[in-house]
Length: 414
Image 1 (cartoon, helix red, strand yellow):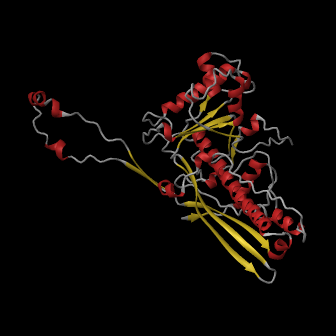
Image 2 (image 1 turned 180 degrees about the vertical axis):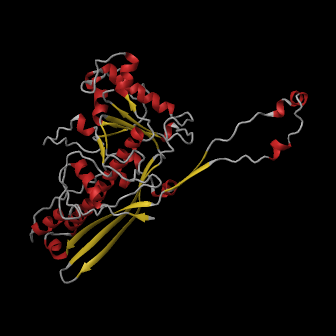
Image 3 (image 1 turned 90 degrees about the vertical axis):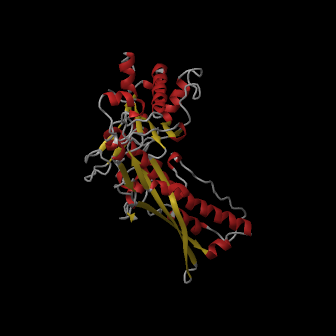
């Protein structure tokens, strides 16, 4: 196992995703929440790629301010203990299944040869009477293997000052409420870290589809080519019911195409197929809502259109376009930006990568996987200052396997 330290890239991703700045390892703050290039390739493992950890020190000031503000007698305490789950949970793999994502072996298709069993007389007439060479020849299968060794550690610390907590509450129930709130804050911090990794996993998958395997489908370009209608553009597509219906049809058709054994939608090495139960689809919320509300109800029906089940995401990376507003405009939420990588970990080139207009990501369950497969809490009491430190450890794996289908859908000017 290889553990990589990369606190800053996770915090930068979380800042763009949530719109909240975080303190980096050098003491400075994330310069901006604006959507900008991330080193997302560092958090994914494509068999030889790199993954990053995160310190998780996201709520220190909040907890500290809370304890400092506690008074000796409070008539009532209301603690926010809501659990945060985030989006893109299609990537999450159970701990018990993670072993299948650490090592992969693939076999190419076997050879097909003429069967002499049904043509013995004809073969004999043609002089073919000796089958010893066919019987004793060795017919090997070509195999491919990948090993994923890198993991992302997330550590979330929290300090609990003993006296202030006990003096601030009147009974055991209020103490339990405070403890529950603290635990929820820690869990939510970890979830935010996991969500930022999931988003970078999606960003890298989109980049691979666009610039590596070349499986990207430009819905607008295909619409213009097949219908001859060039009046619909990347600026006004949301108002075209005809285009939205065509886009949904194309996505549904592509999803059905994955059922066939083919190398058209993966890295073009080993032919694979994806049963409907293993097919996952994530749509950009803005695209999904345009299809729901701007296409007639009797036209847009997920079951009738056979588009299947899917999930949505507000943005692939962030929503701040740099204008100082938070209007979640299409240009911002559909953008993916990856920093230059001299090692070309994703196979998309060494230059910085930018893709506009991403509205969907279709993938096999085994193409993208992430699991916080190890968890542990350690603690240390400091007697002289009378406080308890708890450290919540989470070890995360995030893998991309291009042997399985990955398809990005975009709406961009041809």
